[in-house]
Image (tube, rainbow, N blue to C red; front, side, top):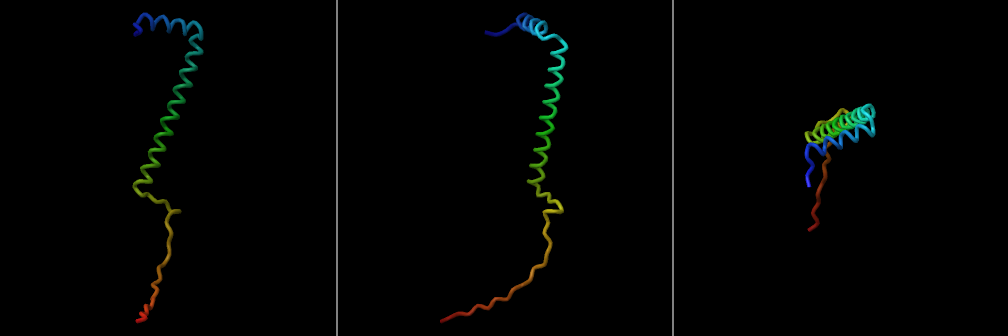
Length: 78
């Protein structure tokens, strides 16, 4: 069972009469803001993953120091 254009128009008119156009407009605005926030959060998360994969290191991740060579003597007991 599929809905035709006339059924959709009737449903939209009933919804508009029940809620009013002002209420529907505010619901649409809220939904749009929520979607925009969700998309920006996904974009930020994707950028963080790309940074981790490429090995971009921040200054706090780098450890500086000197390496000293140790001489070990190996003795064989035959």
